[in-house]
Each structure stands twice: as C-alpha cells, then as structure tokens.
Length: 366
Image (tube, rainbow, N blue to C red; front, top):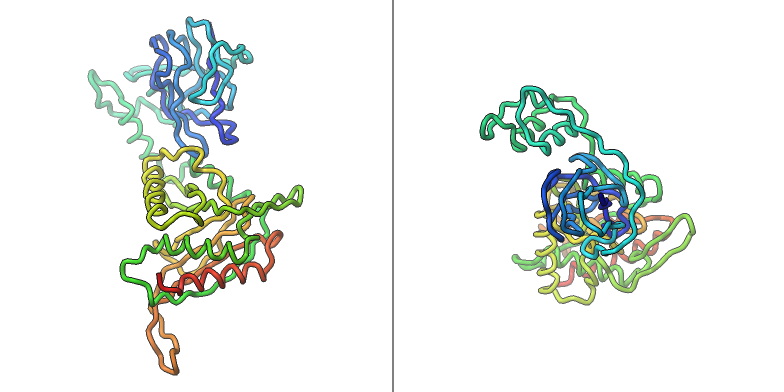
C-alpha cells in the first residue's frame, strides 16, 4: 500500500476543502488522471494522480478540509509514494509521508440507493438521504438530488463558510485587526468624457497617476516589523463581486501597458473569475486595489484594506449635478471617489496628493 498526500498547492496555501471525488475505491487510475477537485481560499483546483494503480481507499470526504501533507488517497499498488510536491510537478521516487490518519467511514443509509460519493457528500452537508426523492436509475439518489435537498435547508440553519466566502471573512477580520484606516472623499468632473469611454481603464489610468504622485500608497507595510516596501510597478488588485463572495485578481504592471492590452487582460480575468479558474499566481501580489463599486450602487464608501497593502481607491456611481460654471448653474457629470489608506504607513498629505493626481487625470480628456 502507498499513500498520496495532499500536495503543496503553492502560493502559501496550507489546506483545501474536498469538493468532489472523480474516482472511487476499487477504481484503476493512470498517472495524471484527475483524482479530486479541491477548493482553496483562492480557487478550485484539480489534483491529478501521481502514478498508475488501483485505489484502495479515499482518505477524506467531500466537505472535509485537510491540510497539505495529510493523506488523500491510498493505493493498492505502486512503488512511488508521494510527499506532496506542487501540483503539476509531482515528484516520483519521493520518500514516504507521515503515517496516515484513519479515514472517517460513511455509514450506509438503510432503504436508500446512492453511490458512496453521494453518501459522503450527504454526511458532510448533514442531509438525511432517506428524506430525498430519488431521480436516478432504479431509484438511485443522484448528486443533483442531494444538492437540491441541501438548498432546501430550513430557514435559520447555520451555514459553514467555505472557499471564497471563507477567505473574504478571514481577510476582513485581518483588515479590522491589523489596519488603521482613514478615508478621504472627493469628486471628479467627468463631463468631458466620450460617450463610449472605458470607465475601468480610465480609473486604472487615474490610479496609476495617483501612484506616481504619491508612491507611498503603492506599497506594502508589515506592522509586526514596522517595515515598508514601496513598489515601482503597480500590480493592481481588482475587486470583483461574485455569488460566492469577493474575489480580487491582480492585473500586473498596469502603468506600463496600453489601454488595449489592459482591456484584454481585464476581459481574460473576468472570464476566469466567472469560471472559477483564476490561476493562483493571479490571486497574489496586489500592491494596491481598485473597487468600482458604483457599477452596482453607492456614492462613497469606507473601504477595507487587505494587508500588506496600504491603500484602496473606490469609485461610486456617477451622477448629474448642478455645479457653478462662470457664475451659472450648469449640469455636470460627477464621479465620486473614495480613498481609504492605512494611516500607519500613509500620511494625510500623501493621500491628498494621490487623490488630487487621480482627479486631475480623470478630468483630462482622453
């Protein structure tokens, strides 16, 4: 018998939740065949088999959260145990991992027909299979039947946060405990914009202008060591709202890329976010964040900063507003802006210079 442990998924991730098994005990698999889909705090990842062989036992159930290096699969045969190398670079001939923990058995439900994977998922969700009307062949309860039943959980039942929403909760708690936030608010007059202006690209350009005027906001700060790192390149985190929670992928070196290239990069990131297939490398390393929350609603906001970043720029919903121009009341198009910064690392003057430069850029015709 050999054990395959949960491999290192990279990017500082230490655990993952089992989402769905693609194999079962007794199956024969080949090297690189997908074994299981797991969800980290950043993405859903398929873990491939490091070898060919027959599956003796699955060491975790859907819904379980296991740590890197914990037993994942036991093989009946195969001379190459795995130590948990990075996915895609699974080393052959590695030394055996620590002895496995005992798997938790899934007791059968009398009077019901369901595959082992469905029974395991039902146990993880706390759903009684005996209460589910089957739709599969021969009265078998399918995974779809189970998911429908799980969604019908009575009101008031608790929900364990997982995946992206769990990561969001942890990041917000970290922000609350580690950051000393301050927010400055102002408006940009964007009456001169073209009708087809690419709003997000203009906001990115303005953020780059702000970072050039006040580089201290494009930085990381470590409050434990009281050290700060100011970045030359602007690696922009883009806050994207999804049904699963907030995802913030990164668009690299936005200050040196033309608008057309930025738009292609944005479209690719959004497609990856919708498909939940954002590469892990594109979810780490943001030096400053942009939130275009006004696409949904809202004028101003006190935004949350995720350490080690020290600033986030937000744009609210643009609106028509009467403004005095040469002594006359004129309707202008106004874009509200909110800049939240970590006051431990950024002064009010630096934040003001950043915001002033961003406004000047937004008010300059393209």
